[in-house]
Length: 173
Ligand SMILES: [Zn+2]
Ligand SMILES: [Zn+2]
Image (tube, rainbow, N blue to C red; front, side, top):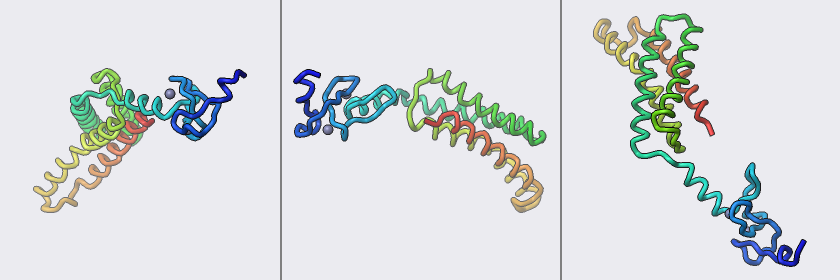
């Protein structure tokens, strides 16, 4: 070890001596500043600039994500109704997979921390749309929203929860 290495001081704490360097920019950093990443120690500045790169979405990406998630979830829920429970779960998971795959293709893999919430909520709302139809129909026929459609409503609700949970699960991190 050379003399220059033993007399390093932290870039952010000039009074603290250290032997660590950021493995990206090479600045000397103390153990308090250093963030341990899978590729080694990084200084706070490099961590911050990495997080900025992480947000790559353009403004219209979220609009596209809402539209695609909503439409696929809506069609999926129409398709899954009146099927057995196992087929329904299968279609919910399949539709959730299709939502994530299609949106990623459409927005060319651009990403933002907001995107997973936008997609999860859109998928949930899209697949719950038929419930509004049932509510209106029941209200017209029975004069109450708790008419004959309760079973279908629960069915759609379960489908929506599975679908949106699976969308969220795929987008975690
Ligand atoms: Zn420091
Ligand atoms: Zn650095």
